[in-house]
Amino acid sequence: MTRSRTTSAKDWEPADAQTVYAHGTRTHIRLDPNTLRPAPWSDEARVLATKFAGPLS
Image 1 (spheres, rainbow, N blue to C red):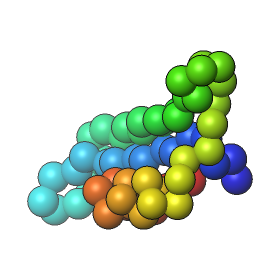
Image 2: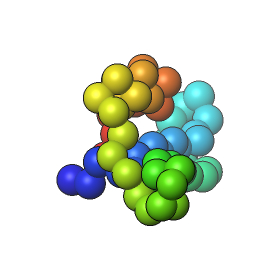
Image 3: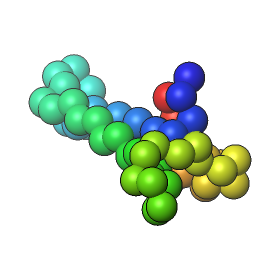
């Protein structure tokens, strides 16, 4: 698993949960401010992101 990006996903479905109307994902990549290349997320940032978005891939 790479540590420079995180991905979260969400399904949108009605209350009866029988049909998924949409599925979406969002990927966040941390860039080093000096090189603009992917850089690892800190453990603290990953814990905070998990609280808001669920488990990270």
